[in-house]
Length: 470
Image (cartoon, rainbow, N blue to C red; front, side, top):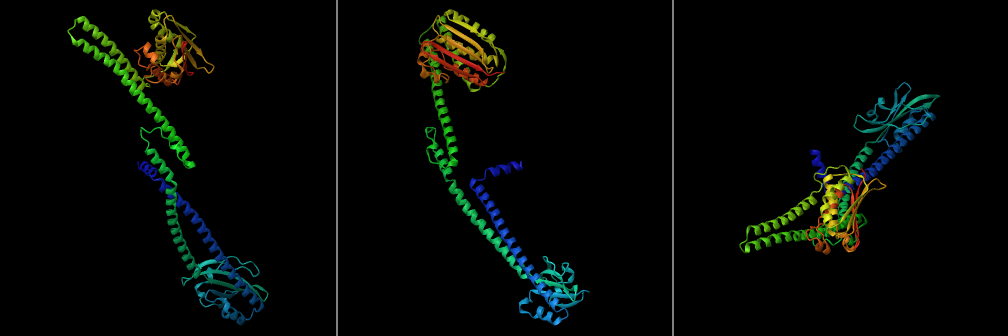
């Protein structure tokens, strides 16, 4: 639960805060790398300089001992009296091969012999010294080497100490200055990051204002008409596509509401008119019975319309697909419409066979709606041909061709819209609701299939149902 709340909290953080934080982190990493490199370089340079200084002093003392092995005065004058020896920082201890101290700089007692590195032989390269904190709390760089004299390699032991306390204090000050500069740099970078981010997000805020101003009456407006940065072009295209879909849906909803009101008003007006006429004067039981029977027909029409609307609202409820013998299912429908077709001398032919994976109830409703439409708009003595075929991709096609009046080309894109009925259709069959083909399309979408319609005025209409392979 805590992790979920943390995730929500992070997700709700403003883009400005996130980008500024990332900017600060990147700046921190860069500054740390630069300052760390400079600090390490400075430390290495100082250590190298100090070690070179110690090596130079050791070589000088070795040279004096090699020239004057028995002259302590010459050595004393060079080590303790030479102004260039930096006595305050540079300390020397000279011992014989037995470890007895011959000469020692004042203060050298702070660096006992025990803590010096192993001495190297005269003539060998002197390595780096080691750090040591003396008994006087000062810090030294220690090194040691043997001096050759009187034919002996280990004639004198030289122990040299360099006081680096001031250098360490300098490095501490340098680190403190680096920390302060790092803090100031991060604060400056944070402020600049906020300004840059807010300036960069101005187009997004402008887009938000533009979208906010679009109302239900202004869905024709498009965000992409403005000039946006390249990064926002994709968002503008997506918003325009969404507005297009919303506009189309809103228009369809408006048309649907208008058509629904019109379709409901007709039967309600009929019922009201018949009731008012029946109450104008006293009528017999037979006359009232006739009014009730007429009203029942209108009630049935309303009931069918409401059932169709509910189906279109929730078409996916209760669908159970199973393999169907398409020929057998259509024969049942032909038998159902046989009386109507025979009365109007319309012949219904069936050819082909196949199997489809479909819900039996919805299958019969879809095909039945198409056959019913074909009967309504085919003249007496016409023909309806139904052909079942299996296509190369193993999908099943059902072609229903009638010899009716056909549909005008400009009306074809609208025939699957809810409540849409052309003027000629209303004239020929005024009891329809305009929901039949909309239900057919909804059923085919539930089965992942398609429905298509082609028509030619005066020659008839072809409707094709296509079910995917099993």
